[in-house]
Every structure is written in structure tokens, then in C-alpha cells.
Length: 198
Image (cartoon, rainbow, N blue to C red; front, side):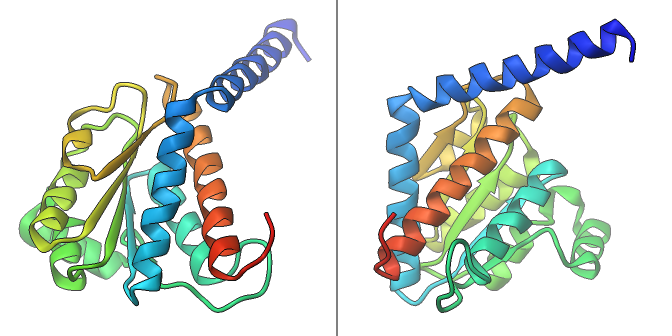
């Protein structure tokens, strides 16, 4: 293997570790994670559902998070109602064709959401127009709005009841923080609702 590739691998791991270490010491991030877990638990305990939206890699994260809640995280328990808004290709292409890509999540929030539900909106830049449109729709409907974004927050933070800001500016590193934070949230919610020790 050539040296430049070896250097890149080692450098990237070091950068990833340092970003995680920064997150491990970020009390504001920790408070946001605990608040997100509390809000989601309240949504589920109220008999409501959680919708999750994101583009690209964040769409993958949305599906991952929904799977953790609806199936299981660490142990067998009742399913928790969560749905990723990035999975139905017929819905996405119909809305995209008829109304534009900016509306693909907003239309689903307006059609599926109700007061008391929650929306996790994931955007590493905080500027994705379809994510901001979904957050606006959720606010209109009395849906709890939770944001996952990068260190700068972007415009979306102004539309979130609670916003989790990953302490990073590079998309891949932000995404690593997002899925780690989501796993912590899933663990906190699952253990609290089903009386298991963390």
C-alpha cells in the first residue's frame, strides 16, 4: 500500500477520534441529547409518533433511527412508533414531481402529522430547504421539532424546539456525531420507558 493512502487512513482516524473526544467533553451537546431523549419519551408516552427526515446520508440516518425505535435497540420490548420520511419512493417522486423536491418532507408532515407528534429533522448544513419546510409545517401543526445539524446550526435551528449541534464542520464527522448521539438517545428512551438499567 502506498504511503499517502496510509497517511490518509491514519489522519482520518485521528481526526475522527479528536472529534469524538470534543463531543465527549461538550456539555451543551450532552444537555441537548438528554433534552432530545426526554422530548421523544414524552411523545411516545403520549401515544404519539416520531417522524424523521433527512437527505442523502442523513436519510440513511433517519431510517437507522426509525429502525432502532420500531424494532429494538438493546433488548426485546414493545415497538415504538417511528417512521422515516425518506423511504417511500412513490410518495417522494409524486411530491417531487407535482410540488418540487423542496416539499417532499413538508407534504408528508402535513399529511401524516398531528399535534403531539415529533419530527427529527437532520441536516448537516442546517440549510436544506426541504428540511426547513418540514420544520415550518411541524411548527404550524403543534408537532415537537428536534434538529440534528452541524456546529454552525444554519437556518434550521430557529425552527427547532431543541437543536443538537455536532461540534464539527465537515459533513462526514457531523454524521458520525449524529448517529452516535442518536444511539445514546435510543438507549436513554428505551431504558427509561422499559425500566432497564443503562
